[in-house]
Length: 79
Image (cartoon, rainbow, N blue to C red):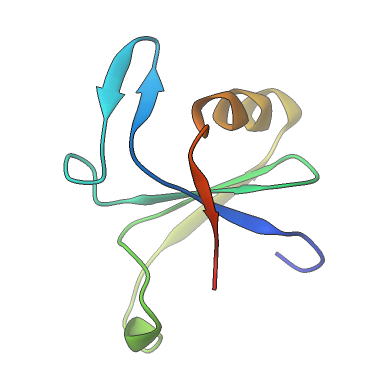
């Protein structure tokens, strides 16, 4: 996402009191520091996988983004 700092959501997360970890869900969730984007990627990303097929869905919606930013208390920079 051009011009945005993308943050990778890391374990653990809590959704309405239900805990989840990357061990339970191998998808990756991404949030932007600014703006209203949330993305889900179907598998963990590694630089060695740049030529492998994968799928990402990004949503640009203020209410959805706000909810995922609440969930995403643990994040790290994407590199």
